Amino acid sequence: MSYKINKNKHLNAYWMPFTPNRAFKEKPRLYKSAKGLYYQTTDGRQVLDAISGLWCSNLGHCHPKITEAIQKQAAKLDYSTAFNFGHEDAFQLANILVDQFPKSLGHVFFTNSGSEAVDTALKIALAYHQVNGEKSRTRLIGRVKGYHGVGFGGVSVGGMSNNRKYFGNLLSDVDHLPFPYNENENAFTRGEPEENPMHYLNELEQIIKTHGAKTIAGVIVEPVIGSAGMFVPPKGYLKKLRQITKKHGILLIFDEVITAFGRLGTANAATYFDVIPDMCTIAKGLNNGAVPMGAVVVSKQIYDCFIDGTKEGVELFHGYTYSAHPLAVASGLASQKIYKEESIYDRVKNNVKYFEDGMHNLMDSPHITDIRNIGLAGGLTIACRDNKVGARAYDLFLKAYELGIGIRANGDTIVIAPILTSSKKELDPIFDILEQALKKIK
Ligand SMILES: Cc1ncc(COP(=O)(O)O)c(C=O)c1O
Image (cartoon, rainbow, N blue to C red):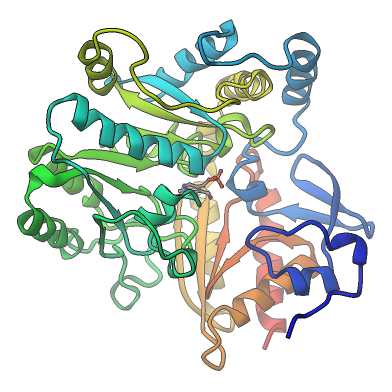
């Protein structure tokens, strides 16, 4: 039986993503404007954004310098194709970006989202081995509960079951490493758990044995797991992963869509964990989410292989109409300038301990079974109610919104990712409201 939404009919045409459309359209939550740390709702309330838009508005909403850069660019060069043409600012932004990544990563391929960045990186990994003469390397490896966007490539290597189960015809020849977190062992850890990382990486050795290293093109992981509920892998996990992949000629891709540009108090997770992957996917904080944009930061070795390995013509048959879109680039340049001039990464570092304490002080609140944190990112696990996965966490999300903060629920987890410019005092309402909301829900 089809369910007709009769209330708020004007909301019907828009099919909202990752949203229970029926419930939303019965009782909508509509933002009309935003400034700094706050959204204004259409019903006249102010909501503190405790998830930085969606991990993207790192510098606060409607930052005047970013707004101005977009406005000026729109009046100067609204669009320019990236196929066989370029505009100076795109090259400048690429230079600024590579300067912030480990030295061996020297090139940037622009996309319009994190999902496109992931699919681009996976395609580059596959094509690299073809160009490099190792044509049998076609297998890709992701991780259980990994989130790499919603393209077919990203969903195939991703491991969130709801995102996969309706879309049967995914990429074949994909394996998934175990989820590198054990709540029984590690609940309420501050930062990186002390567990032996090989508990989760022996499986990689096994996959390599089973299929042969020469069949594997690349491994992709989120250095810090975001969408599944903010989980931090054990100490040494990424270093060990790098050692194993390097030894076997397997490319390592860090999906840095949420970790790049300050979330951990560094330019990226590769720097934070002191591990150098072959590619990093980036988006979101790259340009403060002000215009859709993503990118892949690629090693010099991979780029050179394409340039040297193809004698003439196009080296990579891939790209988007809106790659390096002038408005996205303008907001990227403005955002990168702010990160630097306002020492945003250092400001994050100064607030990490305060944020950690605030999160972990929720330990004795009702329903909490785990709390995790790293940088300015925190995750809570909420006890499942009546075997209905996600029901209580969703109630918490609704209650928190009613009380004045925007957070994100996924399954039985809640994610907090404050705007990076928040002062300590501005973080307090997040903890206070979470505490109140936890007491109010059933
Ligand atoms: C790690 C990671 N990769 C990829 C994506 C997809 O990005 P987008 O929604 O811009 O396509 C996300 C989005 O949250 C993400 O967290």
